[in-house]
Image (cartoon, rainbow, N blue to C red; front, side, top):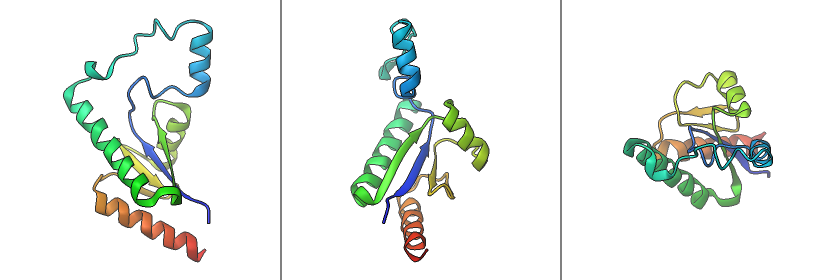
Length: 126
């Protein structure tokens, strides 16, 4: 059975949010060094706490479900992120999409775990 796809739609720190194409382009024209990418310490403490909480949650999902899930980080400022935001009517960040269907905006471990298990059962019966 293929792994469940979990898209984490979140405003990612600048150093993480560039796609491979953008990174290659900025490196080629030598703009990446001058782009003013901020270090983690320059973000407000509230944002740092949110990023840490999200990272911990993603680590928990990965640890609990291992290869049974595929986790993708998607920045809503990217083209792929914009498409997902519009298609799924996402208005809050971070939001998790399980199998592109189940939208989770309340980041509590038990609700996320139940949504993943439920999606897994549905995928097994289909």
